[in-house]
Image 1 (tube, rainbow, N blue to C red):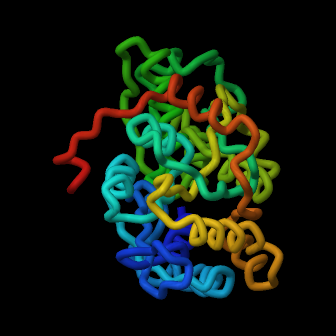
Image 2 (cartoon, rainbow, N blue to C red):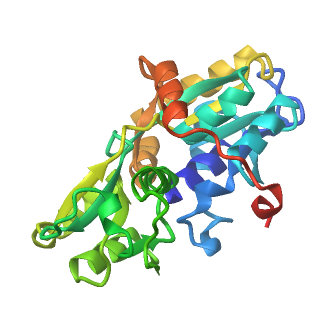
Length: 295
């Protein structure tokens, strides 16, 4: 999720105490490791520099990124005052908000395409009607598969396979590689997020006709940048919000928005609170194995 690395590293605002808007101290922003799933390790150090420049120009604020195992850890650090802001994917924000209700979104990202969805894809001539019909078949899954797509796959597998399993899971580097394996008959099913699937159809309009959508997910809530209510000075929050909301209007901001595949930043959409609650019903917060998460 290269775009979120840019987003987060640029947002690393700053300081041990960002209480006053005029302070030069660095505001700390937390990012869960899930955000880095599709980012080459060599890019992590440098990915945020363009966005950092934008944030400085838009808000006058600098920052420091703090990587944490998961979103709930970030929420805990925000609640304790050790981190000032956090970047949360929509479903992660629902999980974190359940435990830390004082978390408040500053802005949401408006991605390209706007809907955050996932799709189970099979060959066009497949006779299966649900994932349950694929017990003993072969799944192909990209290591870069977005987390909401993984959640959707696991939800369907739990609900429809009734204790069954795939005979094997083939790993690929990219979602497009996984889709090609289904087309070529080397795997029976894969899962893709809307952005990857839409781009595949644009790149390979002919090959796309060899696939069909077995199932599609609900629309997930958008990613947010959030803070603890009362934990950051109102003037700082306003500076952040105003700067991010207008970032796409400058030439530099417009170029960056295109790079990170975010159309712009916006206020949380109408019904956002209800969307979080619905997401939490369908995708309950996982029980985190701390020993595994810290590896």
